Length: 503
Image (cartoon, rainbow, N blue to C red; front, side):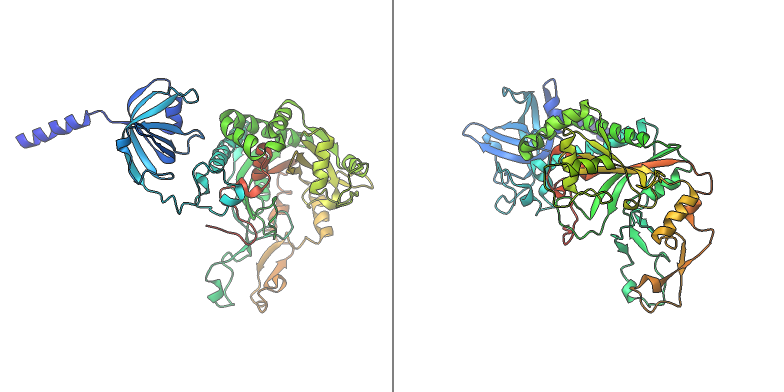
């Protein structure tokens, strides 16, 4: 009993000993007062040993700025190198350096994970090109530029969610696996069970229908507009586009929203403008140093900072597709693709229109009927038939957002599907076991059953349908726009594109 009592007293004594307070680098740099018994963990960004003092700069990803550590030379060891992971305990003191408020006076330095600087592909004090660090998807987050990018992505994501939640939108988790091709372009990744090739050809598909990686959550959001007036989704989308251009990825993130009880395209445009301005203001206020790194060092010639200031102060410009074509036809610039009514606007056209309108974002509305997908609302406007569609064009990028009013009138929608030869596509598809000879031919593999009640997309127009509309914004293109980054592969942590799926 006496031994047990002594044990409890010893434990009480140990627990009362002062313990080092763990601080992140950002917290240490922002501290207003000195503090004793502080612990900071991170990675060494630079080491400088002098005769009487040892200087380290460490970073833990919470800030672009490093925390300076001042130590006695006796604490140096051979594993204390650039890239090594360390844990430093000591006192947080006022820094004599005018560029830094606080520094850490080390009492102990423990190397948690050593780093072989000869083999480490990132070098101290070297500004690596983005193309170089792209080769190392497992290491490039340790580069200053990518570190800043990831903090900006995080804040921009939070800002977008906050915008929608503050405006009464319900967040919907739309599926990644889907049986529809929302865009109708056919650039789909079809998914199959990994052991399907070894199975008998007589067995059914895993889902009993062909399944794909989603290209858009729009059709699923349209389902939700039958019960919620304002919905949005934010998640990965996929396009099997065989392109390695600076503008395309096979996997990217989309922000999409749908609004019920709206008959005016201006309602959609106002949400887009408010979203872009709100998210941009938030990023600029919360990540000023990170954004400055891009504007100053990555894309100094783009004058992105001036463009953003102008964008935030001014109303977005609106022109019709007809006006856009006339502006392009009268341009002194020679285009690779000749602008004609009825043809889609190319990137060169989009960038010229933005320049023509004063380098501010431009809404182009009312596109030709035959140019846009079947679900866009017919304007019923005479010989040059158009739909209530809108694209937002921005400096340096071209198209950033695309949206429309949706065709809520069942006869119009059925007529459009029939005209496009898609009527069977939006009927219920069932397994046809007698036609499995050619598994690569969808006409042999599946059969359409007409006039079944399971025609779900058209059903939405039969049961309490309301006028509605929505839009989608490519998140990576948005980041390119606000940061001035030329290549879309440099604004996503793990870029996937044709012939490349590293890590």
